Image (cartoon, rainbow, N blue to C red; front, side, top):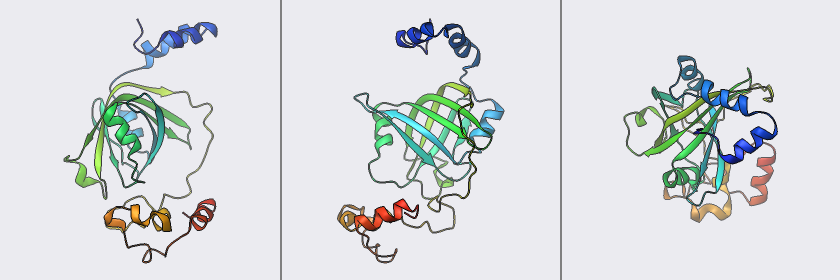
Length: 218
C-alpha cells in the first residue's frame, strides 16, 4: 500500500506504463533522514520554494530567500529557516499554522540539481537559533517525512550575478523596499515603518513604483 500515491496518481502511472518506476521511486529513493551530502546541499542554498495550503485546501507557492546557509539542518529529519519582513500578508506562514503539511523544493541552477522535502512545519517565536538570524521575525522548523533527489533534466542553467541587496546581513543596515515608499500604503504600514519614506528616497506614486519594478530597481 502506497503512502505517497492516490488512485489519481495510480491512474496516470498505469496510463503511461510508469507504475514500476513510481514504485521504485517511492520504495527505493524516498527517505526521511538527511544524508550528509543533502545537508551540505541545503545549507549551501540561498533560496527555495515553499508550498502550503490554507485551511480550505487552497494552495500557494512562495519564494523564500536569504543569505547562503539561512536554511539549517538541525536534526536527522529536521531543518529550520527564518521568516523575514515581508508585505504583511503572512500568507504562507498563516497557511502552515492552519495546515502544517508543507513541501520545499531546493534548486541549484548552476549545476543543475534539485532536492524535495515534504514534512510538517511549526512556527517558533522563541528559539535558541533566532539570535543567529539578523532581522528574522521568527523561525520555522520542518520535520521531514519524505526526502528525495529529483531529476534535474528540465532545469535551465543560470548563473547568479549578485545577491539581493535586501537580504539581511549582521552589522549592516538593510535598505527599505521601494513599495514601502508608495504614497497610498503609508497609513497601512506597520508603526515601525511609518514616517520613513522621505528619508528612504521620497514618496512614490503607483506609476513610479511600477516603473522601478519594470527596470528591476524596486
